[in-house]
Length: 355
Image 1 (spheres, rainbow, N blue to C red):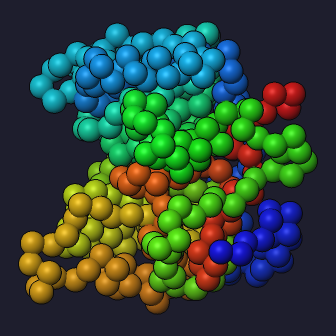
Image 2 (cartoon, rainbow, N blue to C red; image 1 turned 180 degrees about the vertical axis):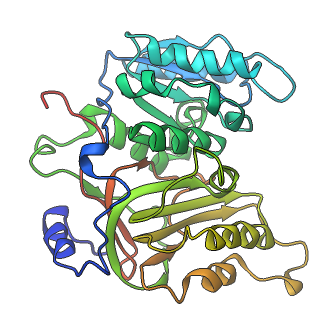
C-alpha cells in the first residue's frame, strides 16, 4: 500500500477545511504529557491491575526484559489470587501506585488483562501519575486505566499487547506486534532524525486482510479509545472519554454483533459519535453470532452507525485481540486517511533522550 511520509502528509492535512479536519479541541498539545522513552538500562515494573498471571510466564517475561538490557521490578501481587482478581482492590491499586511513585522505575508494563481495572480507578492518585510521567502499556481490560489516566492527567499511554504476548512467547509468532511495541516506546528504535521528522505511518500487518473503508475522508486528531466494552463501561463516570475532535479507535473480543450494536447505540445516544475527527475500528475476534442467518455481521453493524458520517471511518485495522496487534499511543496526534486505510502518527509519543 502506497503511503505519504509524515512531512508530506502534515501540510496537506493542515490545509483541509475545519469541518473535515477538527483542531482537536478535546486536548491541545500543551495539555498532553509525553512520557520519556524507555532506553536500555532502564527499569520496567511488571504489574497486574486486573487478574493474576502464572509464575512461569512472569519468569519468561522477566528474563526476556533482562536479556534486552532492562532491569525489572515485580509488583507484589502478580500471582495473588482473590477470586478472579490479582488481590483486593486496595492491593492492586497500591501495587500500581508504588510503581508510579518509585523513582527508579522508567516504564510500567501490564502483564495481562482480564477484569478488574474499573474497580480501582477511584483509588489511584492521578496527581502522582501526572507528576511522574512514565511509559504505561497494556490491552483489553487495561483500557480502563488508559482512559482514566489520559482523561485525568493528559499523559500519553500505550494501547499495546500485554507484555506476556510480547516476551513470554516465541517472537517469531508475533513479529508485527513485537516490532510495533518496541518501535513506539523504545528510544533506540527511533531513527537519528526522529526529532526533526517526528511520527510515522503505522504499517499494515496482513495484505490479505486489508483495512476497509466505511466512510471516506481524511482528518487528524488525538487518539482515544481501546477496548469497546471498557470504554462503554466508563460512560457516566468521571473517567468517561471525550471524543470531540478525537480519532476514536475501538476493538473487542467475544462480543457478538448484537452486543457491539448495543454499545454503539449508547455512544450514539450520548453524542459520543458526533464531532469526532474519525474512527478506527480494529479487529473484533472470536465473536461469530450463534445463528449467522439471523444476525447482522460486524461490518453491517458498523455501516449502520458510520457509513453516513461526514468523517473518515475504517474497519479491520490491525489492533485488537489478534497476533498482529499494533501499539497505539492514547493521546498522541494522528492522521487518518480512510481511502488509503492508513493511520499516521504526526508526533513522537515519547520524549527522546536529549529533548
